[in-house]
Structures are given as C-alpha cells and as structure tokens.
Image 1 (spheres, rainbow, N blue to C red):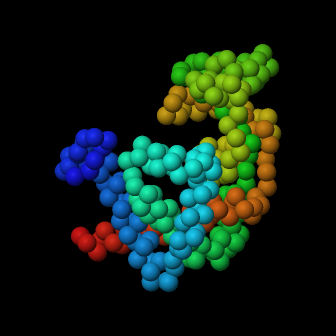
Image 2: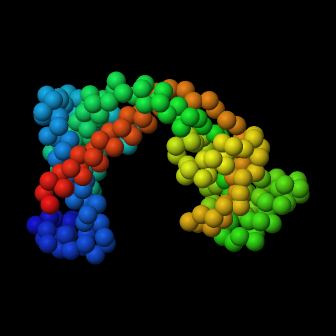
Image 3: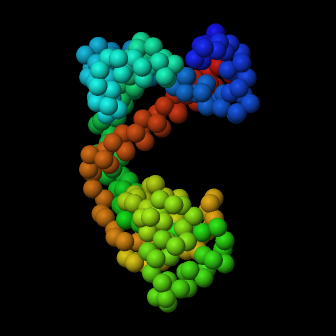
Length: 245
C-alpha cells in the first residue's frame, strides 16, 4: 500500500492507473534503466559518497529556499516522500552522472570532431499562427516590409510568452531541429524569412538573427555527453528486453 496524504492507494490501483494513462511502459523502462545504471556502476567500481549526496541536497535546498530542517521536512512531506527516499533519488542521479563521465568523457571530443556541423548554432525567432492563410499573408507582409517580423510575432503568435518576446525562440544547434527545418535554417542568410511551414501547433515562420560557428564549449560538452549516455542506455535497455523475451 502507498499512502497518498491520508488515503491509502494499493499498488494494483497505481498500476491500473498507469495503464489507463498509457504511462506504464515508460515507467517500466525508467525503472529498468535505473537497474542498468546501478549494475554497470557496480561492475566498474563507481559509487557516490554520503558527503556528495549531502552537498547535492544542500545545493537543492539553497536553490529552493529551504533554509532550515523544518522547511525541508515540510517540503518532503508535501511530496509524500521520506528523507531516505529523497537521498536515494539524489544518489541515483549522481550515480548516473558519474557513470556517464566514466564511459564517455574521452569520446566527447571525437564525437564533436566527427559531427561538428551538427553543433553549428543559430539565434532564431519563430512565429506560429493557427491558420495557413494567415501565415501566408504575414509572410508576404514581412517580405514587403509592411510589418516587421517582431511586430507580427507580438501581435499574432499563439504563444503568450513568445508574443511578449516578439518571437524570440533562442539559440539552437542544428541537431536540435528536424532535418528539413535545419536544412532550411542553415541554408538561409541572416534576416532571411523561412516558411510557411506546418507544425503540430499550426503554421510557422522563422527568422535567422545570427549564425554561430560550432565550438566545444562546456555546454556543448554536456550535450554530447548526454547524447552518448542516452544512446548507450537505450542500447542496453533493448538488449535487456530482448534477453527477457
């Protein structure tokens, strides 16, 4: 039985809920991935110390303004977990990070060199509207300089945050974009308009503010490490599933 506030919910009910919400497979795979990480770390003699867990917990408390033990215990109680549960979660995350560095630190530079173009970046603006005719009309108006991209995004974008930011989408790498969009974006010139393109949310226009050459920054290193580790974990998971079939 699992206690949810003052109500007890049995494990069968939880599993049934996950099935109904089509989440059971995802949760099962996350559990298996954690088991794979623990086993791989043990085989390689990788561990996490109590002091490292404490340091991570202290940083978390600081970020979330949990200034004393009473506030921390109150927050844990709200999350329906014990201090031991919280520490185990921290342990699992730190162990995964340590294993990722152990397995792939030396491969990051090689991966970057072999896939350098994928880490070229562009500073982009995006405008999404619900209807294709409106997107086409805005495309022509921007092209003819009847309205600026920024004004159009501020007036018409379906997303409030992007309206307030006048369409600013951020700095994205080539690999973060779908192949067709990536080819269009990185084949354009600065201030070129790209679109009209269908999307899950409607129809979109893009504008390139600037291009940034690929560089192996700490941020890119972290991205590559994450990619390599996830690829390895997916491979190990598939192997484990096939072994059990």
